[in-house]
Image 1 (tube, rainbow, N blue to C red):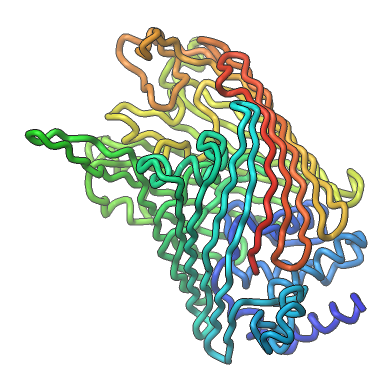
Image 2: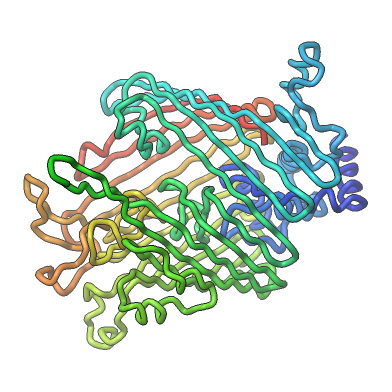
Length: 555
């Protein structure tokens, strides 16, 4: 039956390509399909796949799944079942098999609810338009021994997406959440921790929204909106853009032709508002902050990917036309604008060394001074760079249905910080680092092991060992010695001229995370997580926590 179902899929794709290529909207970065495609690429069951920048469109995802289906003999039984399930759930089947949950209500309601192929709250499609409405629901319970108290999180909302005439895609998502129980425990959830509503109004409520419109024609795509973007070669931690901060608004476009790809983003970030006293009143001033990133990628073959990027942070003024121009060298442009901004140069690469082994690396240069290389003065404070290297292993090097990732990250002192007021020019969004969750003057050693127990059950273990050289502060929080260990403490003239890696107060942290995921039926996911953090310097950062959740997302 599985072979018959896959054969039907391939026939549909072969004789009805418009069904495949009419889906211009993106699949969110949190979807399980990305981990599956990554494993299939490293394993050698998928060729011509580039995931340095996520998310990808449904069209790209389904093309990748089709390529895997053509190499199904390279897949294990569990991987073939998982591929079939993902293909069906993402709607890679005959549109006549799509089910709306309330079709033939109430007689068929339960049957529709547990349907394991594509289903929606409501859907419509014809030769020009597709339109879907889906519910979002999550109940999550968290307990931490930090204060020996638990908290419950209830989050619900809806998602609307669709396409028009093979060139326009759109997406809207809105959720509201409420918290009961201990507020400190609830803040272990990033959505709660970063919620303005929860933290500034002191009510047990948080909300979130994403949305965009996306146009694609031939080799060109253009997008305007807000959604989570991941950028980097790392398999555990993304060094350029990660899921650490809140998502930001942006305009984005890319051009892809054969082995060349060019990506551009101009985004609008957030910095903490400034309180201004006007007479007897206090007013809050919103100060602007923007980011520009562009990358030229080159894939000479299916086993090698290379890229060079320029990044720039600027703030406290309206957007610059120069940084909206994707065809300029921004470092030179910002010097012509009186050198007010924080610029970076990035190199990245990944290589599938052999079937089952991938190597990857990223290097980010903030300030670099080459003259000390020949004077034994490499530790000058203005030599600021970060780098990441890692290896990913799948079968046939390790056992079937398993992925093993190992990564090392090093951030030199003062990396991602910059002279200026507050966080205006730091590499942050609303107080959180844009890349890996790691302060400058740190190293991070990470590994994870992911194993598919079945096509619906997945288990992952993570381990992080972090070393950090912290600044010295007095009892009132004033800085005594600056060693470049805080992204919000930039270099000052009175600080030491040399900055040595891990100098200062040594902080060691070990983190263990266990994750169990079970997709009970299409769209209904049970998750159990355990996290243990032990910090040698700051006991407030040490805790053990468990969480369990049921999540409904029909996608």
